Amino acid sequence: MALALCDIPEDLQLRILSFLSPPEICSFACTSKRFASLCREDRKIWRVMCDQKWGKNTQIQKWGNGRIAYKLLYRTLNRLEDLIGFWRLCGRANPADSSPPLVFFEWGSSFVLGSRVLATNDDTYRVRKTPFLVLGISSEGRTENFLDLDGNHVPVDLSELERANLVPVDVNFMGSGHIMVEENPCLSKGSSSSSGEDEEGREDVVVTEMYTQLANRTSPGGDRRRKRKKEKERQARIKWEPEHFIKVSDFSPTFAKPLQGLWKGFCEGRRNMELYLVKYDEVGGVVCKKVEDLSLSRQTSPVFWTPNHVFMRSPFSVEEEMILDSRIHITPLHGEVHEQVVSGMLYMNSSYDPGEGRVWLYENGTFGFGFLRDQFITDLKRVALEDGCLADALDA
Amino acid sequence: MSKKIILISSDGQSFEVDEAVARECGTIKNAIEDKCTDNGIPLANVTSATLAKVIEYCKKHVEAAAKASAGDKDIYGSNEDIELKTWDDDFVKVDQPLLFDIILAANYLDVPGLLDLTCQTVADMMRGKTPDEIRTIFHIKKDYTPEEEAAVREENAWAFM
Image (tube, rainbow over all chains, first blue to last red; front, side, top):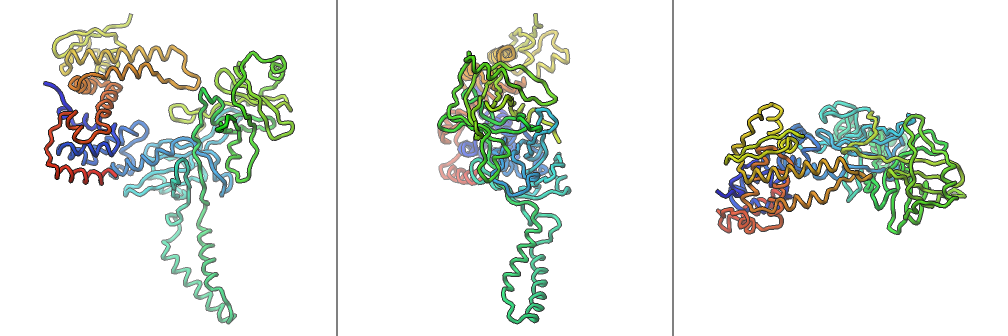
């Protein structure tokens, strides 16, 4: 007997459908009454679709305490998926310790977790990850996002966060690769409902006005005083100014762009590890900047740049070999030091005077850079992911 | 020499395979670990034609995995095996009944890679097609009047926005 689609068990039919997008499923649903009814069932079709796309990354049935419709979950996860990866702060509105220059978003069990990525400052190449922003959904289907300003609270379950002292925020998706994170003061704990506050405020202002009027008959600007007072109260409640983050779209090197991405290393004279971002522009140039400089509103100088990204390959001239061999590699106190074989070299510049220097590409895909004005090489390692998690990470 | 496992199809044919290949099937892997393989493993739900295809898939993927771990990984960490993907694409170019047979077998024998590959193939056949075209390809009986169909379409369009 020849098998057809209608003959196979329903769970396998659903599995096939899970590879389709919602509009395609709509067409399929129109083929027969039976399939229309299959596609109507939230628990069947939408659950299978969530499982297909994100089952390996997160625990589907735990989101919203298992009480939200799977169709809503699909839409939520579809949007949150864009967050996964590295994002950098653009501009800075808050003090440095509460707004991290680099955030890494990854899937949690029933939420998406954004962590600060910082140098460990323990004289190794390790990076430190502390929780910064948690995005989830409540049992009622409301999005719930929280900022952990201290980075102390490692979330296991979204429900426990409601009891901790965290800042509720809105995460607004402003277009491809751009989010704005803004405190939501109405949801802040410790602030009474807005209508209650208004009444209190109004009463106070009326009393003040009365005395002011009595004291000074020509006292103007009652309105302005009221507005200023409200604004001050609002500012006092707000713990965190809105911040913008931009996605780091190319955080890994490729064969064609071996310098591209996020790197970490030690600079001459600096004890602490630095994080760097290297980008290729459209006209064949390469720019390297410190990650912490990217968020500063004023223009900062790159660490180095070059207009031509094509590497010169060995063998190199005697002068170049001498430049390389005489250098001291800056290494952390702890950690392995490997002798690297140089496979390529570039001329580069910095804004110092004299600014000329070199980039040396190593055989293992990492690279080092140094300037002619001194005798050092900074060897960089990748800020890399292993199986979707940050490699060399010390979890807080 | 690796151990051989005997698999017996529903129509009584015996297939001798390397243990590593047999282990690609989750249910067989469990049987091996439970040590019930001495007289061969009978697979009542899988015909010889289908079993031959499943074994072919498992063999190829075991070989590919061995090659990948032995060879040089790209320093940028990419493991893209274009050759294997092309092989997979050709592997699923079979008629519908056999394709569905393989889906059922992959499900019964617990071969996740093969199940995903075959389900994806069926999904690809539906992509971009109108309901009429889907009905023709998959021999689905139309039990709607045009009015009913329009009503269902409208209902679903809203549900999937």
